[in-house]
Length: 472
Image (cartoon, rainbow, N blue to C red; front, side, top):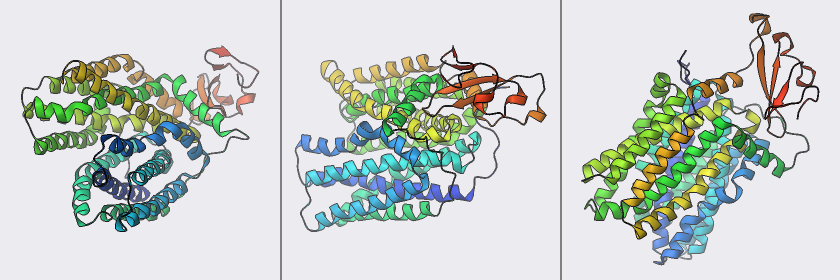
């Protein structure tokens, strides 16, 4: 049987519709603020370093608190974390809105707001990622459908509708876009608060926050499939930020297009992203999730190579659309697979560790792109990015293979009733210790339901036998 993550699924539950609406409204507000904050900063200063401080402030929370934030989310009620965070962000935006109305807005205040908004985003996004598998019963196919809808709505709201709305609202007054985003957060909080409650993960007894955070990070680095899923966005961010750093200059000097044409290039990429999110399930069903992930990563690398050698804006737009499609499909398939195979009590830490790796890689990509363009020429960062993407694809292909994906999905499924199994068949039960390490126990079906410490057989972690000791 061809291994895949996608199959025919039942209708998504009503609760998902409310979560989808909440995230769509919130993404629209994010798009408004994404356009308005830099423009607000420009009304205060023309100093490039001051503007960079406002931009950088929005990335610092993931770098400083990514893994710890995931550990906290794994301790807290996920639904409550989401609506409390959105309520706090709505209240926060009232401060710069009032400052703008009173004409006391400043660059340090905007930087502080960007930092705190991103910190709230860390908690909300991590909690939402951990909540979704519980809402959908950890069903792989439903997770794929749900993530495709969430990704498509996020792209449409924050990529298409939000930025122009932010620019238009700013023309009405400096506080207007901030108040609009505050309203979006408030609406999102109300919708999330109405979501159904899900079981709260069992807390690990007497474990420090740092130890829990370290366990979540170790879980990612010790699992080849999860590591492969984390490496792709991390290396991808190095490549894509290298491209993004020089893309506007490349479009102007090499392709001969102005600001309007550059906007059309970005629109082409976003349109491809919507298409990729929409066909992700089809690709997973036809190719298997592992092969589909390898194909989409390869498409991204080849598309950037096509962009680097594009002779005119039309070819460049097509290359960016193809690249966006690969990214859109990857960002549906990868998170869906992770949500299906990671234990509930580790979901927040695993998600935040993967996101932190990607965020840490972004500044490196920006520096690399600027250095290569300065030292060589504007096409060099694009060729280097394509080489990085294709090399990463080759390295991680076996880590995220169909066979490895299917094995992980089987291990994550609830064990079948022993009465339905062949008495002679041995089954492997995978458990997770309190500190996040995986334990593999080979046992007859009759013993599968017994407590781990009472089962016969060999308990193995990193290939070492610990029979009779319960855990390594």
